[in-house]
Image (cartoon, rainbow, N blue to C red; front, side, top):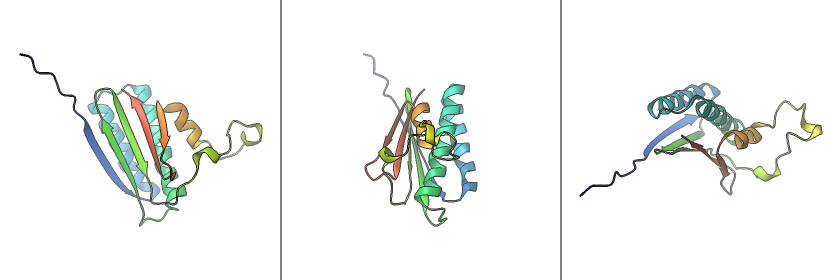
Length: 140
């Protein structure tokens, strides 16, 4: 009688103070997970871009750079995908009310493209109802 191989899920978590310097810990975690699970270079680059953007947004917009407030980063990894969640302690926002960065009047704006970029690079991008947590899915 053969036993079926049970799929395993690995969980990772980081609690980052809302200081831009703590982004180094995030980058290290992404690199470790990518190495361990042999993530393709393009997926690795997309994860690094999306997660850096999500965490910086959480620190700046969510937690107002209050170093006493944390940004929580979780990763759930199985054989097929990595699901990242980034949560801040801020009030949240409505991601559906963001200006379109591709609209002619916004093309030269210096900010306002982060959520758009994350939606383009991640396989799935989901905000919670409050708008203080984003879930980013990447197939591996």
